Image (cartoon, rainbow, N blue to C red; front, side, top):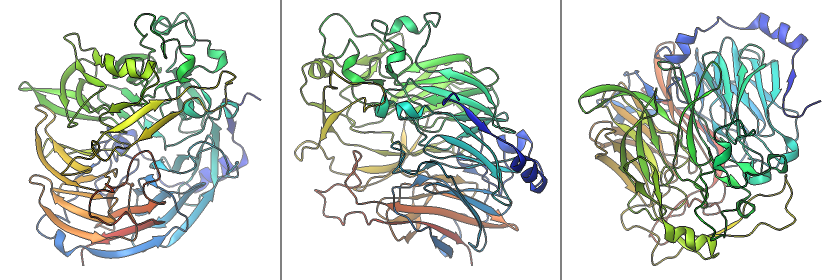
Length: 573
């Protein structure tokens, strides 16, 4: 059997279908009922905006803990709960669990029986489960995308969309776009697999289309943008779309960010002084696809021939924004290289670009044609095998999603500043597909790494002007997904183990609550029987062990507190 795609259906599909709740229309997924949060970004456009206003700036100071659950395992959980019809759905290490949204009682739990020691993405859960048409749809790290009955947890279908022989896995939950489940496998770093984005039928898991991020045929116009071109059967490619994307139902466009080319020094531009490096499309880019066919609509390459692991893994947001006095449907794209882009959602025209990181030393800006300007000094250092001061360092825009409010017109973006010294290492000459496809030394320098005022922040940005309207900054990492509400509030957790509520317009901190551990997860809001709740998650391993720092060790602060993954839910008395 071809390991790339395997579908499991049968008697369970028929039995589970009998117990499903009322079907949701696509309109209900694109623009959910106010009290529901049916996928990672809440709506298809991934705005993380909720119109709920029972909890607002006048009464948020009265918010109190309603219930909490320790989920019994420890990891840097980077996911978001989802909610539908009073039930919360939460990803865990091997599957998913359902809880009563008002009481926290567990209703059911599902665990995959696949290999729990799969090498890809075994330390994090990202994204959020999809609730659609009586099913909960989610992915597990060894490559299966699964649908279960939302009321019983009984399996309906399961589809494998990864190549185990290349150490591919899944590091995020899928999104839903016009009845299609969209998922991008991870693992180019781990095995050299060429990146892909798959669309599955939400009803039965059947593969509908695949977009090849790395061109597989000379007929693809991107093929000639690679040196040589590479030999795809040898596993050269990279560009995994390993974080969640977003879907715009207005223009029927799916957008995902992509990773760097791999394996690093097997590509001819690595440590070679023979001419200019090739672009290697569509690596380190954002790619926009037609939802019906998967055909490329437009792309924007942030870092051509990326040599610094600048995966553009940031989750896009689609929104209506005024640009030059005209209402435009746009894709809001923060980059890991320190910029914030405003693109026309239909055409991909760059309407605005704003520098958001305090310093940029690799991606220096854009020329008059909208092409990225990459530092030659940075390239020379990489070709010589020398450390280079990379700013921002892993990474300004970060993994967590942002939020956009149609009320304020602002995007609320978690981010982390500072620089690292980056040195790319050679891949062994006997490297083969399926083996680790990149290596680097990433080090801090106390005299030139940390900015005085803050390491992490939640920043409110005007997309048209790039103005920072307000910012909450501190010396802890800030890599957690916020929610912005009709009550003019922004809720976000942080690595300093606090959940906070801010005035969405002014940035005034109105309420905070100490949690049991640091957080890298997302916060949501939902209702049960008309009552509004706010839910967030915590969970960290030992701080300071990852490439992205959890705190500034030079500041006089307590290190982040590790602890089990746990779910906390708040409401008004």
